[in-house]
Image (tube, rainbow, N blue to C red; front, side, top):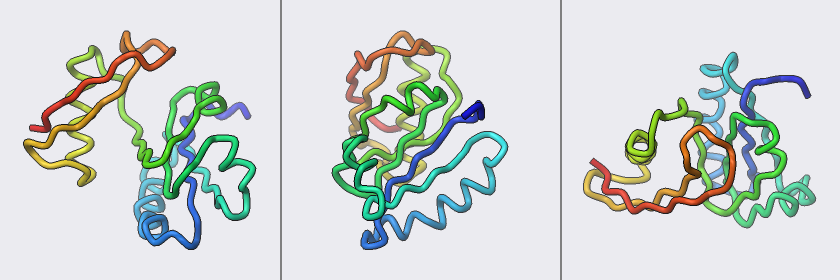
Length: 137
């Protein structure tokens, strides 16, 4: 596929209440960001081969990458909720963006400690080599 837009893959099951509740959020995101990204829904009950291939252990699982090669190779783990963000300039900005996103999405509140994993240096594709506990402002 030659489409350069990032791909958001949403693994779900019709039997999953949380996955069904996320559908309105995904529909809104798809309408709002259509020019900037693509959304692909994968029903794990109909495509267990893909769920196994990407190691989806629980649904809903979301993953996003601006790089198609990463999307093809990524291994997804339970509880992954991904969001498209601009590439931060440095490690401090990366940590701040992650903490702000966790708060905005209702996953954390001010004062909570969250674990952030990332690859450094910022902006270079590669492995994950950072784990940082960050306090949410």
